[in-house]
Image 1: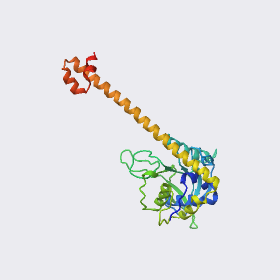
Image 2: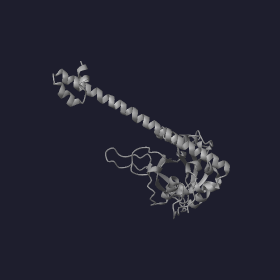
Image 3: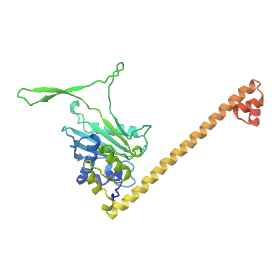
Image 4: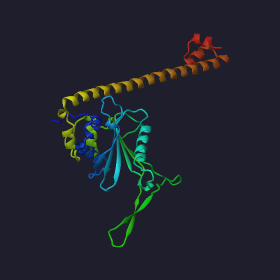
Length: 298
């Protein structure tokens, strides 16, 4: 029988800030980035340092090292939908600026990967994981511009070098949790299943997902943690209801405006027909307006 787990967004705000729990985030990143050798070097100061259950923003900034020994800043966001793309751009830009020391050569610009775990639909699409970065393509040919850099290779007595593709722009992963259909086809699906259902799918084998089951189990929570967690769940439901209510009110307002616009268009058509001496019965059939409304038109 599977253990009931706490929500992953709550875990990011609380438990996963502890270095002893980095293995959970490492497993998630290994599966998403398809690299089993990712190690978290440090958890940076971020919005996740807010611990109050009413805090709206949740961002975790990590410094990792991958299998190529590259040091990369990882930004994991989990938040509401207001101006989300703008906040995403601001977050990655802020990391780059904050870690570029004044006077440093621009060749030392930090590589940033931004990961968003979304519990709402950001747009229209037919997938549950989206990837994006900055690419340059020819306006005439449509072919990509491949920028390369030279690196030294010291395997021989005589210095040698090779050219490798240069990728410095931020990369973005958007995971739309609600779009996921609970079908496991690859390792990252095991983690998204956990995030969506608060339990581990039977037969999951991706790196450290067993640690997630152990460390995120509700049964492991203290009384104080459980109380805070329950408050968080209540606030989450309340926020979702507020957003849905605002959307419905917006739709109602839009519908009223549209109906008024259509009615005005009908009045204008009826006015023109009346000026053209068209019989009132025909005007009624053409516009759906009442006889009284048409007679009042000048």
